[in-house]
Image (cartoon, rainbow, N blue to C red; front, side):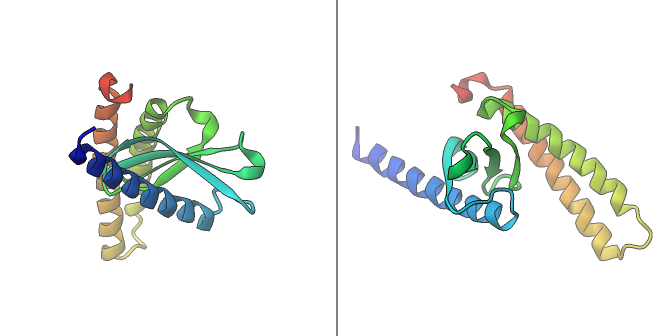
Amino acid sequence: MSKKNDTDNDAFRAWFKSELDRVVEQMIKARAVTGVAIDATPMWAVPDRILIAKIWSAAQKSQFIWTISGPAVVTDHVAGSVAVNPKDVANHFALKWQADAERIRRQAENAALTDSARSEMKNLADKLVRDAEALFDMTRQDDIWS
């Protein structure tokens, strides 16, 4: 292995460890996982962009959640039972985000909202759609999931 590859691997490990720590902390705060000890493992990644991981309470390993996070996507989670592998859960997130965007757009039509709130909601919906489309495109590239 070349020195450059060692450096690249070290940088990748540092990134995914930092991202995994960040998403675990978010999932604990959101109470998506509970327990005295929380474990996590990265399952798939696009370095410096997207991390798909499994997170679980050490006392209930079979009750894990899938998470997705990173600078290129919104952070989200779903029950472990919705998918058997990272590619399937990525596809699930893409579909979920499309549905979430539509729901947010409908909520943004509420006349009681301020223009600022309406604008923020529409911007979030637009981001969800962009993230969903990009992630869905990735799920169609079999070679990156091997």
